[in-house]
Image 1: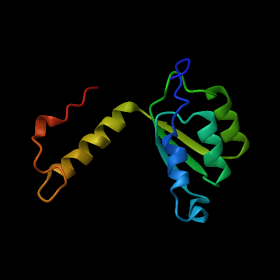
Image 2: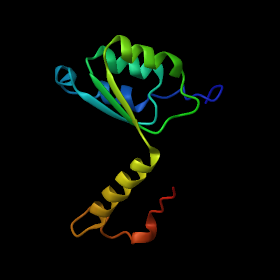
Image 3: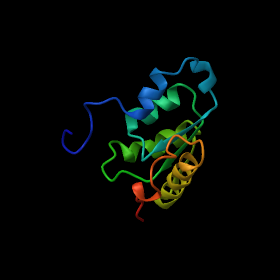
Image 4: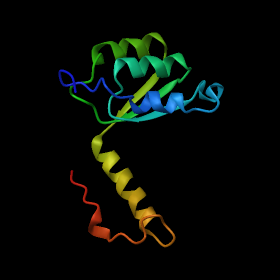
Amino acid sequence: MVEGHCIRIIHGEENALLNCSNPDKLVGGTAVVLGTPCYKCALKLVQVGIKKIEYYGTYANSQGAEHIKRLFEDRKIEWYCYPKEELVEFLAKGIGILQSAGGALKDFPNDSFIFTR
């Protein structure tokens, strides 16, 4: 962390773009992100042709947050921030599925994953 910001890593958005086998398929697509994308990641998503960005929760220290709204408006990008509670519900549901018969987490006890709101 440098001055409260993670600048020494590749963010998830950039990692997804770098590992995309066919970038043409991203044009007009939707990106779903955990937490507010930083300005640089938002810009990269827009530049590859993403037209809708959904994210769960906001980072209080997201760099460039004041510029992201204008970027999305200027480029006519749809964007929506889901409440963190919906992320918790989504993750709990996914873990429940993975813990069911045949799931990758079927051997983990139900109380292995604790979610608080």
